[in-house]
Image (cartoon, rainbow, N blue to C red):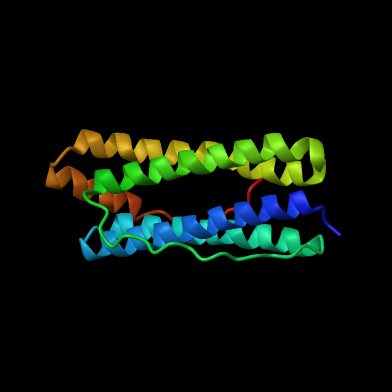
Length: 168
């Protein structure tokens, strides 16, 4: 059976991914309501990606005969402000996730190197997650309150394709 500290850590990471998928889904619904359908699509796909990460962690823990504990996720807001404010929250959340995975890796690698590899794969993916969010924030800052520029960014984000990508 899996070590207790591994089980606790993986359940903690499952909780973070659960929160992420819920947060991005709430943001997607909000921006869709505000008629930023491209940004809403981007966030919906991001939510799906985070859900896939959560399922991968669940499968990993279950495959080690661990006990998966899905905790309650706090209710999410229904208003996230301007598109810039919304994506600034995305960036802040991705930075939080990166920090959580960094700390998890530092803790778990000496305890269970196999789980350390899994956590490292997720940590590696966070490089791209943060970079994407930062690029969107920077572009929205450039657009300022220019409706035409915001619509161009909205259209570009709406072109995002595909589903979730597995870490590693």
